[in-house]
Length: 149
Image 1 (cartoon, rainbow, N blue to C red):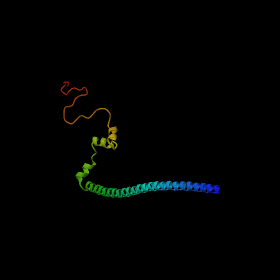
Image 2 (cartoon, rainbow, N blue to C red):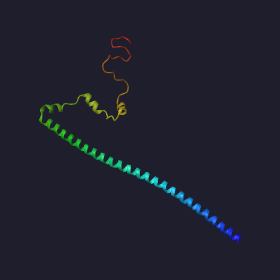
Image 3 (tube, rainbow, N blue to C red):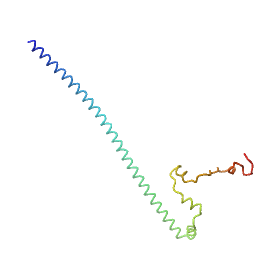
Image 4 (spheres, rainbow, N blue to C red):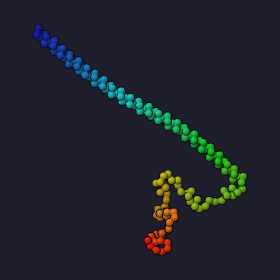
């Protein structure tokens, strides 16, 4: 009978260890599910933010297209008005038929600058621009009257 009690005690002990292991594993799985739910919630929040930004961007694009359309229509109307004036007023027609001054032609041949870097690249290397006002100096640093500093 002792063997039966010892055997029964061992079986109960094994079942208790097995139950404790199962309980611990269920707790870990519950924690893992909570972590995954938190990650999913964060992703959903990020997606909602992206959707909101996308809608805002779409609205802004619609506004920009509308403004571009308005600017285009105003430009078209002004160009038509200029053409009408050139055709109707002889003085304007004569002025418009004259060639542009050489400085303006050179300025229009320069590529459009998009920022200070592009503008600097389009400028010729070498001489610097003198400040407005003040006296000009020659390249040796002499004053225009022949004296030195």
